[in-house]
Length: 327
Ligand SMILES: Nc1ncnc2c1ncn2[C@@H]1O[C@H](COP(=O)(O)OP(=O)(O)OP(=O)(O)O)[C@@H](O)[C@H]1O
Ligand SMILES: [Mg+2]
Image (cartoon, rainbow, N blue to C red):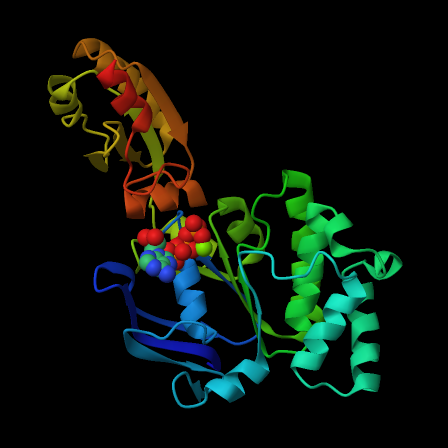
């Protein structure tokens, strides 16, 4: 297989204390959209910043399109595009002026630059508003301009760090359309970070879950879902005694207690098992406050491998509970 990115034990420790990226090794095949999925603070942006040369790794190395991160940084800059998490376009400039600025930074000859700018403006549907100040663009339009900026140097590899952060659902889905068409038109490799499960599920051919700076698991979304091997029943039990009794339920393939206290049980076929479980609960005087059944999904994959829901705080601090405890 042809790899666009080969990461070898990349680590970033800030101030000798905070290990943001922890010994990450990963190979990313060419010509695909690859997702890095993780909670806030998981280390996604730090990893991208190292791969795009804006942060020096503490240790480890990587190759981008066969070029060594430390030795060939100038060449890497030429063949990669990056759309950072925070906006980089200038609100006082028009969409077209922003693109011209990037073209100048890359030293692209004027005629070629103007042609490319028009192509890109059409591609992200901003041609009609090309002379409007970027600060007057909607959130989605601004992100599309950022996307076009990342493509100005016709990169082989494009990094998109949280490309739809803060946008509403409809605008996010609309932006996915542009990301897909960019990948298709230019046949490039796109590395996309996100903490939106639906985004990674919808866009990425393959993905890795990153948690506390480490790659926890990698594969296609289907492979990860299949790795769960069964449906998941979640129960909210009252105490340890109820949990101990529940552990004896014969149909459970696997049972564990989550950091949240919820019990997570894997079963072969929840439709068949549920009536048996209800009978077992009655016979053993277990009365859970809540029961939910879920088929394998990327949400469940994330919970399985990190022990937390992606929407929970990193480290799983229950601030609401802490506050209530203090009252
Ligand atoms: N310049 C820095 N100095 C010190 N610590 C940092 C620095 N940049 C990031 N960190 C820490 O490194 C960890 C990873 O941060 P990072 O921004 O890479 O996470 P992320 O996955 O991109 O999160 P988010 O989803 O919020 O963007 C966090 O604990 C963060 O506080
Ligand atoms: Mg980030």
